[in-house]
Image 1 (cartoon, rainbow, N blue to C red):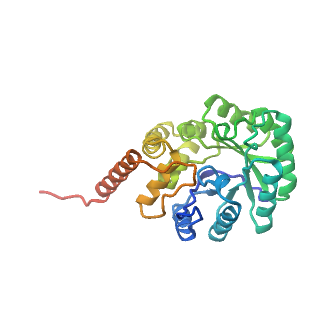
Image 2 (image 1 turned 120 degrees about the vertical axis):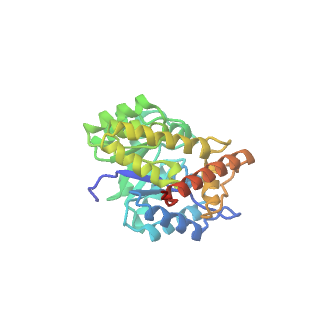
Image 3 (image 1 turned 60 degrees about the vertical axis):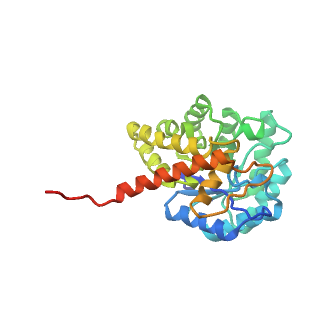
Length: 312
């Protein structure tokens, strides 16, 4: 097992698709190379942003194999195994283990929401058995699963040696802060998935962030992470202003947050903006907001690189 803890900016990468909702391999590789070139610390495929639970099985397998071929083990590569039953999730974990993955990201099962801590513990115990030397990363995202992984449950799993890392995307600051502080006692590394509180989380002791808007602009989040780990509150606040601008234009400008992210990457000429049905495509208002952000960023880049005029 790799004893190094996950940390830094781990990008929940989008999955580019063609009109048939099959993975666009060339575009996917282009996105992955762009993120690696930006020096992100890790990549998470097949999560909510990657539409992993929505892809048909054959395309999910293609997606994770392409990512492994492209990324290898140069940086940590995580794959989502979220599914509707314990057995389905464990089958995905076993397959990832067979092809050489080191990290599988697991939420509570969904469709039938599970609220009992005993069921969460049973799920993660069986997942760890299926994983062998692979690591299971717990993922708390109640808005998608309908249930919350209690702080006490996550700490118990860490104490049992089933997990060392947890990603939280609930957007609940008191919960996240409690998880960070309690997790320290059992060696649990916490990764903040909700961008609105990622700066706070880093200053409080989170070891990394998992920002979806980094698909468009990884640099902002790399700077945010560096400011957070050195405890520079002023710089964190400044970069959080930028992060909130990105969120406003990319994820909050239309009825479907993912469509905005995908459209932004398409507008940069990197990948198509197709989303898996029943996701709603980007509408005109959303596209206009994203275009406005890109134009603003282009003007800013031009002004920063424009040579100074010497007079006198």
